[in-house]
Amino acid sequence: MTLADAAQRVTRAERRTPARSARRRRLSGGALLELVALLAVAVALLAPVVWMVITSFKTTNDTFAVPPKVFFTPTLEHYQAIIRDGTVPRALLNSVIVAVASTLLAIGLGVPAAYALARFDFRGKRDLWFWFISNRFLLPIAVALPFYLLGRNLGMLDTHLALVLVYLTFNVPLVVWLCVDQFRGITRDIEEAAYVDGLGVYAAFRRIALPLAAPGIVVAAILCFIFSWNEFLFALVLTRDSAKTAPVEAANFMTGFGVRWGPMMATGTLIVLPIIIFAGVLSKRLVKGLTMGAGK
Amino acid sequence: MTWHTAEKTVDAGRGTAVAATAAGHRRLRPRRRLRPAYRLPALLMLAPAVIALLAVGIYPTLFALNMSVHSVQLTKPYLGTPFVGLDNYATVLHDSLFWGALGRTAVFFLVTVPVELVAGVALALLLDGTRWRRLAAVVRILVVLPLAVTPTVVGLVGRLLFNRDFGVVNWLLGLVGLGPVSWLGEPTPAMMSIALTDIWQWTPFFTVVALGGLTMVPKEATEAVRLESSSRWAMLRHAQLPYLLPGVAAVLIIRTIDVVKLFDMVFTLTRGGPGVSTELISLYVQRIGFRVFDMGVASAQAVILLVLSILIAQLYVRFVYREVEA
Image (cartoon, chains in turn brown, orange):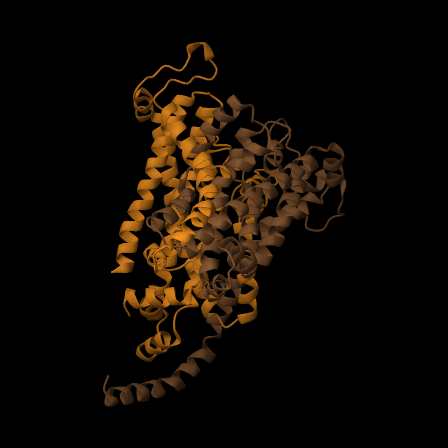
């Protein structure tokens, strides 16, 4: 770009400025439209979840009211009912056990693997990395069928262990992907220096890299927890009763005559609550976990 | 502005969820040869994860492959599991219900994903460009909410909202003089209700990733475009699009595969009904496997789906990323 060109551009820009600000003032209609759109989006995003929570505090009569009641006397009867009944708390406990165990196992397996992929160079590393990630593309239904048969033969149906293991199919790739990234972000220099000081590879990993990568590992762990907590298909086909997780228990409310809306929404609220808290904490990182592999 | 510059900046920025797989690959290219002393540690660190994934991911898939060439009727154990060659595959390929389910899945994809893409990116542009900064900041936080909510529960809430007699959706329609619609009782409305629910849950996915891309648009690029033109379209086309495309393409791939996988939300919202009108492919395979208990045929279906999803992923990676890389 010649100097003359540039000068011409600047003048053109200057000439446009007054007209622009004038348009901006006149544009209040557009601004108003933006405001309405943003508010509508906010309501649309929140409404279903808020409605679930509201309904969980309504008496059965209020639930069926037309037009829908926004003001009503809240009741805890549904929460009391599901706690008294005991199946939902047990399912929630199962969910906690399975999600925590699978998360810890995935971290234990995935973090060292991620470290090796990030720090050591060897032939076929790219392929290995890609293979880890490609497990995200496995179809759950394709894995569920054989897992069901295997579990039946091994007497592992309806156990926590079966779910913990099958959840590794999505948790390990997640951990590997996020943590390879995390370890790559840490400079090698400290570890190199540690080697010179005579520290072994494992010690350098444990005492230097691991603490430095801790924030990323925690994020990976929370994401694993969320995905395990939300999982439904495997839990549906691999559990019957004693290892049944919360989403399966919630889905049970639709069977039989007369849906019990109150207890169902109360259960839904209890399931979603911890996830919303975690999601609030993670926000952007959550999406990083969702896009995994294909995104980077 | 070329693709190349966009990708380089993105790569250097180590931003969320953008840049092509190819870029990810390049970063992993070996920088130095592995010193012999590190060989054993590297092996020991990788082996457990590899073995675990082989055991829980690949082994069952091979198992399914094996089952798909045998007759496995769980309700008739006395038949044994004779080898039947490709019979199960022939059964699947001649099964109009399988094709029906696949067709419904395609329809569902065509109804939801384009809407999610356009609405999601539009929302990102709105959030990025609006002068209501505070409100936009709040919406940016809210937008993550649907992504995290348990899909099973989303389906159950959908049942409540779309209820014909006391659902909020019909009440709102009633306010403008429409309805009531029997959302879950008739084929087309049922399909619309699962589509709307899916759009609610996954439009934010495009939004958040597009927002990530927009934050990486360099100031110089936007200023340069502003000098040339004042239209929003020009800004999008010349400055923002190169940064939006890689992330959006990635989400498109993931959404495509997720639609093939989709099970939980539909299961609790319509259970595939009425009839089979919302029975998407994963629900159909599940029904054959776990309610009809014909594992051989179900495995053949699963294998076909697996191949299909790998093909989709490959196609996307080839076409979308090649363009990005060029």
